[in-house]
Image 1 (cartoon, protein in one colour):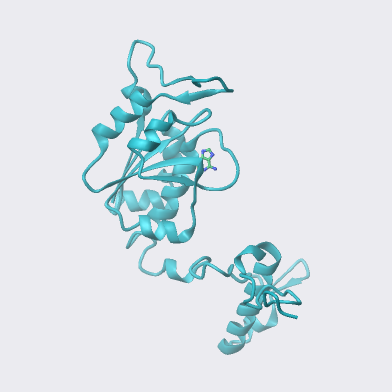
Image 2 (cartoon, helix red, strand yellow):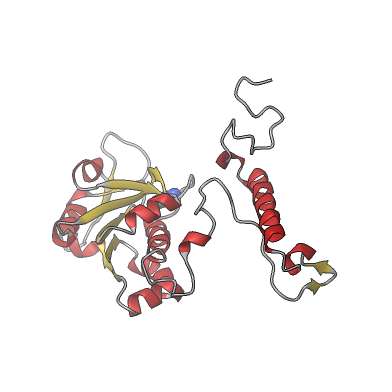
Length: 239
Ligand code: ADE
């Protein structure tokens, strides 16, 4: 896979991707990642990339010319052009899995109040948001999306680990709590069942704790009517 990130802050985009698993994935040729300074495509001596909103309004928008020029230079036939923006579709694990099958991802990072809408109409394939909050710029968001994708590429986690075994493999359930050694720490004990060697009991314990954790932290994942929410009245319209 090849990833290009066009941003006013290439260092912000690259910093998280030059450590740990994404760094190793690059070193072993699983992915090639390039970050580009948007100013490279900005016209004029001052390399101006932003301007005021037509019709008034607060803040500044990224101008269309540099973004169009960047995409025209970097786009390949197989590219998916992604804009990271709080106005985008929510990024979830299933989206990471889908995008991990693409040969080329080209990220455009919003800044200030966003980008001129002609960019979205003409050159962006997908708008993606990493959550319902506003970051200073899209470089950080693009790095988050790339990290989630790169670790799913075949070979990225190493032979011994599989992305299938982790949280959000089941999109409706969080992972169960996990413990390591020492088995007793400051009077806090690892649950006995995990030390019992009884795999059936351990699996049952994990399932029930995963459900408990999901009910407490992400009740939205447990659909109505599944009976998994812990509602007293799980069926819609039921009594
Ligand atoms: N840029 C600023 N905030 C963002 C968000 N929540 N998701 C994606 N891009 C962003």
